[in-house]
Image (cartoon, rainbow, N blue to C red; front, side):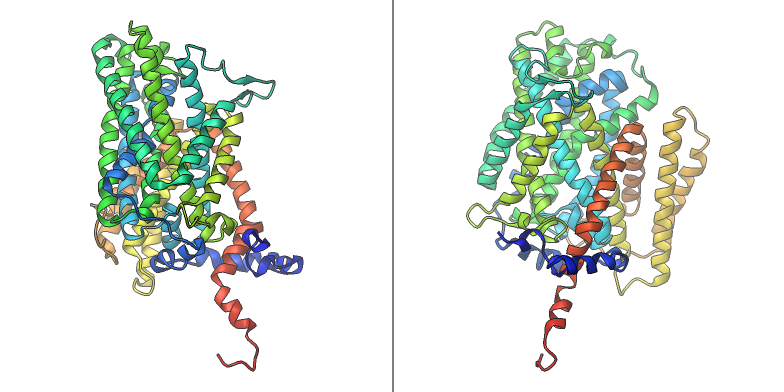
Length: 566
């Protein structure tokens, strides 16, 4: 390794060059704000930064099981009990339905992008093309935060279910300290599980897929047992009162458990390793998500029927629920299934996060050393190690509720941006779209976002009110109709496309923003602090490295002596 592996570009050649770069911050920021990548660049030049290609070894069958492995286990076993107990009650079923509908809208957007731009960067690459470098960086920071915090949350949940399997109290294997509340339970077991998962992911993508098949099949069998046994031994009387916390509780819980659906974007990150992305990705994404929504709703229903919501254990809900209905022998079986599910989530999450980080490093948003793909394994070793270290640091200190609220707001924010990017992709092509139509598109998008924010703010402050919706909903409706009627689509999907554009992407924006508004103030404070830290990093490092990479050819031409023939 050399200095350029960590500090690339002319701006970091020496202190004098760096001071000069910092003095041009405003100019460079404007350049990065207005710049756009393109499909060819992401598929060609940017990928070459990794020096070696990833191996194309996955098909639709692998992607479906990766979908199950990356999603089932994280939210349903970890957060369902907590949110049913604290926010939604038996209406947790409706919370999963609302979140699932919103997630499916995002799946449509991801599928179209992943089919046409099959690279490891996922949403980061898509946003670089449609919304520019700065928007992509903001998303990149949240992408990494989502993945790192998500793995930490699941690893903490893994420890809770492991202690249940050993018939111990959920926190008995954690180290109790005098640190502040939410950070006072140290979890070395979570760190060990993360290290093991990342080691398997580093060895081989194909072998990881085979391991995921086996573990996910076992987990699926346990899930069917949970659903059937839970419904047979449940009581409908436990479903009343159905809305103990009101309608607001449904959306508060839906915003938190959105984390349960967040893993599906991992499939888009594996597009670079998929043999036939045009066929395999739509089947893998849409097929797995459709099944997962049904499974989640049925599992939430079975839990709600087994126990009154006030008696549900927030840490190991399903294991203790079966014990409460006289199926004590099922407690270790459910705990084992939960452990299997969470293990596959960590394993597939390790794959996806590393590929996110690899493509972000290719664009020099972070040091390019993390873009390296090993020639023998065909996996991004350095990026995997970095994500593991960061996730382990979070998992060791932070409690589950501290992690989950921060995670959900990042996930919802990214999915909202993806819906905006899809509308831009369909209705704007540089050099083709007129300035008038571009201004109209920007104006209507701003109205859609503003109306969505207005609805979210009103719903959060006055959950039983309706008056403000008579303004915000028609504004959203008219703006979306304006895009549909006044603007021609400049680009149609080549293989697979989102149906009912602009209505479905616009609805995705509205629902994601509304769910963000359902989160508590603490989530926005943590989100704001994290975003501020990201922006400081961007101004000091990311802005200058990406500017250097974009203008590398221009800088090389400037170095050519005057008497040279070009």
